[in-house]
Amino acid sequence: MRENQCEKYRALGLNIAYYRKQRRISQSRLAEMIDISRTHMSRIETADCAVSLDVVFEICDVLGVSPSKMFDFRE
Image (cartoon, rainbow, N blue to C red; front, side, top):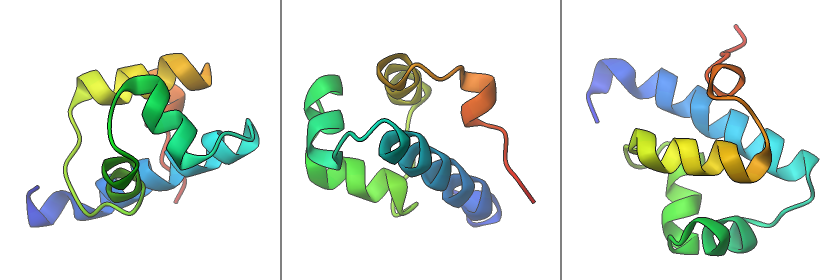
């Protein structure tokens, strides 16, 4: 992940956590539903790693959130 993009990854991770919690889905359950490890899910939400668009789209599908909404970063 490029250093100049860290804030965007952090905002994305916060949005993922927000929508996941809104739907009362645990990190473990979401990770299982998209076939990644719970550790990887945690790292995505805390912006500790980069995430592919494929994974983001899978998360959006499971959570029922459009990608445009997931990438709506509040300032």
